[in-house]
Amino acid sequence: MTLVGNWSYPTAIKFGAGRIKELAEACAAAGMKKPLLVTDKGLADLPVTQSTLDILEAAGLGRAMFSEVDPNPNEKNLEAGVAAYKAGDHDGVIAFGGGSGLDLGKMVAFMCGQTRPVWDFEDIGDWWTRADANAIAPIIAVPTTAGTGSEVGRASVITDSVTHQKKIIFHPKVLPTVVICDPELTVGMPKFITAGTGLDAFAHCVEAFSSPHYHPMSQGIALEGMRLVKDYLPRAYADGTDIEARAHMMSAAAMGATAFQKGLGAIHAMSHPIGAHFNTHHGTTNAVCMPAVLAFNAPEIRERFNMAAAYLGIEGGFEGFCTYVQDLNDSLGIPRGLSELGVTEAAIPELVKGALIDPSCGGNPVVLGEANLTQLFKDAM
Image (cartoon, rainbow, N blue to C red):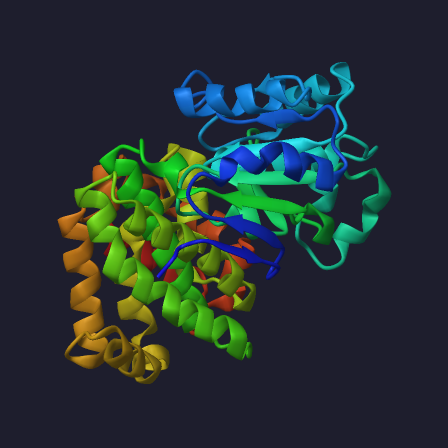
């Protein structure tokens, strides 16, 4: 099978090894003549980023970059990025990197023409309609990890540095105009990032599949996304140069983020406040929380995961699936409990408060309340 394609669902995606070379063409399609590449601090000086800037420069598009992006980006990073965008008189954003670079880049494009503070556009009710849609700059997304799927998302997660809450900022026009998914860009990922991002994609698929909301298309995408992770994450982890495995994991990441339009749940409701308070890696945190959440949701999800286990070639139905999840975590070096990530039991009451107001709560198959979340955090410790 040739792992190359041109897809228009959920947006225009140029998929395949080496397709970063088409970046200048993508800029032209998006109407960009002076783009700002937004990425995180860790990627700024790496060859993969510098070669991408070379492509832009060779096409007469400059090589402007903003990289003051933290692992869990906050409103201070955003303010600095918007200032850089305006100072450079840019006309679009290339969001480049993992979840942090992608999320912050999308928000720079979103906020560069708004007059209200970013928190006025939090994903609550119809708050997104407050934005001036015509002032949102065009966005090209280039993922360099295979996890968050933010490249095909209509929202970003930004940490409020004052309240230590992760907040979701949503607008339909935040969906990138063009996405370049080039698995060669992920070859240099360290093992722990390959594991954490891959399990983030897996968590998206698991939670979307668990969600009680009706969305058959997302349900099918989530199921196949789980299969791709099962079959190819161990290969990508064992051999980072395995392009076939890297390609399928990049697909799984985009599929997970497409599927979770159906809803997320307790895994993310827990992970977001943990990341905001303890600055943990998001995908790794999801992986640590997953076994406890699966056990908690068992009464509502057992039957559908009996079916999923059969499709995935996992014996033992739901229980077999849960055993598989823990074994996969162990094989990828994921800690067995949140305490190994630095989370303290004393922080649980504050974490519960954050989880209760997280939009992810709404997709959990079992209704979440203070008592249930408190027990879940304790079970995941």
